[in-house]
Amino acid sequence: MIGSSRFSSRFFFTLRPGSKKERCPACNQRTFVPYITTETSEILEGFGICDRLNKCNYANHPNGETVKEFQRSMGRLDYQRIHPQPQPRPHLEPVFVPAAVHAEYQRYAWDSHFIQFLNCCLPFPHTTQQLQNLCNDYALGGIPSDAGKYGGAIVFPFIDEFGRVRSMQAAVYDPLTNKRQAFNWIHKMELERAKPAAWAVNFKRYQDQGGSVISCLFGAHLIRAETETVLVYEAPKTALYMALRYPIPGAVHVATAGQTNLNADRLRCAKGKRIILCPDLSPGSKAFADWADKANRIRMELETVVVVDETLEEIATDEQRNAGWDWADFVSDFDWAEYAQAHQSM
Image 1 (cartoon, rainbow, N blue to C red):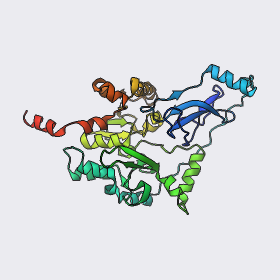
Image 2: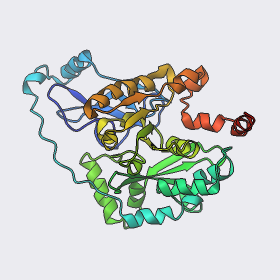
Image 3: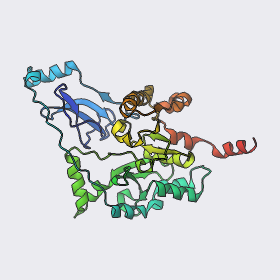
Image 4: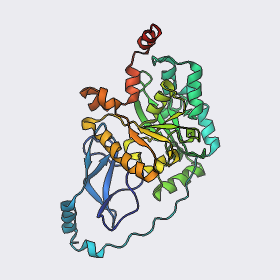
């Protein structure tokens, strides 16, 4: 989640906490996190960040002049003297998805367009058993194809290092291209029922109080004492593609579920491991620069080896960079049959 509810008297504006999004001024998608005043929570129109940083690239941050102009419009030129001291952030008890709910979705992983595409359409030299192992390892779920709007969706569970399901995301992928078409959170879908389950109601209350829907890495439960390397991608889809194609001994492929979700707290479960950050491509390499900057802070806070993989930046074309390609795109585009044949003859 972008932003924090830990308001500081040093700042007049902060990104709005919580999962609620507005329509982006640039791409018109409901992916925009606006800046709000730290005193009254009023939205600063036009200022904020689009979550689709690699595709939309809209980010407009307030500066000193913005603060002065807002103060003038509100008749509050003495803001710094009267701004109240921030209150301590209350401790929020996390809400977990019940194991029985997760288990029910796991029954339908192979009903998802995502898994069916990997099984039938992706030119990988992998077996059906390896794909089943992937579903088991990441505890993937699905929604039956005849189940309405999200029928055929893959369900990505976010399971922390203690084995607790922190949240679950349902994502619908095109059965012909495996490009994402829509997504939602399972607790939100549950709330649309006539009588939503108590856990979903509690989860919404947790969010409304500032709790994050993404409170751990996708794949965090796979990081164990014997794990040597943790490769971090943006999308769960990319982590799964790479885990299937590159099952490196001693390594785990995980995802942040968004460029802005990378931070030391979510990577704390990987402390002491070798962490390799693999950002998506983006216009002007902004995603790479963002994760490179965060890598420095994470390295110091966790006292852990953190490097940023430069491979995509070195091999990408301008077209691929501007389209925001990631490792999943490169893996899909690769001719593995030709690769295998070439290596067999060596």
